[in-house]
Length: 259
Ligand SMILES: [Zn+2]
Ligand SMILES: [Zn+2]
Image (cartoon, rainbow, N blue to C red; front, side):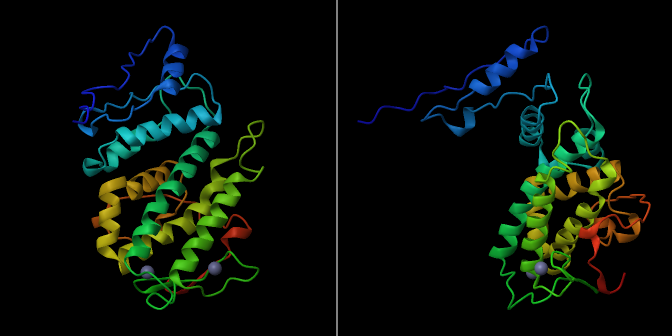
């Protein structure tokens, strides 16, 4: 007769506010042991980082996302979530960078769901979103790519830019303005999902809240101007004010029709 799985093997981790560094160490040591039932797993609460080290910031944002009930995520909650936590002295550009990095990871879930929904060159042979068609700017000259190629090229280009020294340099934090062109490209992935794979958009959104978080980041740091927001209010009400400036080489793609 097989041995019964232990009832509860998660490590309890009380937060020591006077000595937060102790809690950080406990978070690193946290393990879910083999045989633990999912219903008794309680993940440690997010612990505000004690330094602005990239790894600590990433772990904090990741744990915030894990603890967020994405089914009931609202615009207001999303805006709250992306605020710099009280007591953390971090450069605005670094904080925006860490959220952009997280959003690129979450967008991969949307890409997988699109692939499962048949978003292939034979079905979506152009990067369309309703009445709009977008050219892919990840080439020496902007060109027509199938939707899934556009998405892969744009995500890859975005991640390469985020890993480049001009963004990922702790001694020289980026301006939040620098993320505008990346965000505008990434926004079009949501647009394609919304207009061409509507149920996929909602399935992924209910699991991850990635669109609301993306738009919260966009609104806070004015990344995607309101005149480029083409998803209807049903997807969430956003009034992003932008300055409309074209920023860098990555922003060369144009809409073929529409805007
Ligand atoms: Zn598609
Ligand atoms: Zn391309």
